[in-house]
Length: 433
Ligand code: DOR
Figure 1: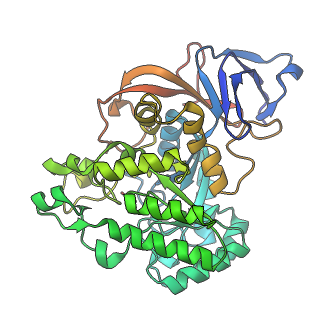
Figure 2 (figure 1 turned 60 degrees about the horizontal axis):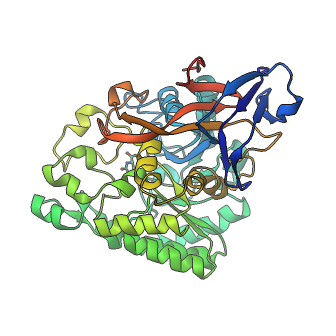
Figure 3 (figure 1 turned 90 degrees about the vertical axis):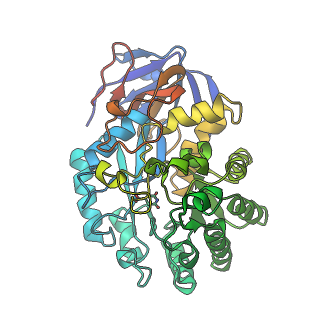
């Protein structure tokens, strides 16, 4: 049991769930939020000119354990999360082997208990080996601590199977997260099916590959009278479909990545594989639609899709290089720069995309808010801090970021998990990592 007590003083506290945006004291004792007035011997941490929020949640992270420890481990991935301001990460199951059994979940749980510096919430596969054929044991997953199911990296093509998954998952209150991609359209594609794919002679992945499955999933969620969550939305068409579905009262939620919010497909003009991601970077029209979607809450969540890859793999020719870029240590600076400092979203709206948004997708009342008695997870932001991204300072084991040397404004400067300072660049305050 942790015993150290803290009082965080002087910060602008933003908790969108509680509709708080004011300077108040926050107390922490024995790892939980505590009324600061009841704390006598607490260490006072001065957070003047800083913003204090509920701990950020990243709904979409590839920790690569088991099977990819050359690219990331639970230890390095969660250190990267802590340094990026995230207190909770949802670990994607497309590892090797795929997390499709309670044994694999148990492995993750034990490994996280020993090595993780932030909360690791395991997601398990929808189908065995994520092959899209046989459903996994969703019923037993709930008891094992699985927070959601997804075949992320692949999309369940069989609609009848997915309808049954949605109906079954509903009985266990298990969120279903969908990577939307119609295989016959996306197969062998490497980039957005547009100008730059054509000029570079790359097979394209059309927007319809995503939109068709978004439309299908909305129809299936309605049919099953349940909820579906759409991962990494990239296309304007998908935003329109989700917006319309929400208007019609269908329970669909959606996430977008910092890279789809800030980059477009012209980045691939020199075959730079750091920009090869799935779904692909699309056009300025799509990027603007994603931003509009965030603004009107069509899109509920910003999630990184942190996808570590070895340098040797990313050095391959564009068509042979793997999809994905890391994002845990750049997400907060990128979105503060691109969305907050450009007056796209208010700070409170932005914080909601990392706190209440993901907590609602996970159906977790105990996450994404500051409430006496709950586990004390906090993120401290210096929204004015100007700096340049430096990939050599990353805690992640991988370096596949396109944002190296980018000048940004705003950063997470302290991360608190269960009342413990796990990361800090505040003067006089040491973090665990
Ligand atoms: O770019 C991506 N990388 N998209 C995915 O869906 C999977 C991920 C990975 O696992 O590398």
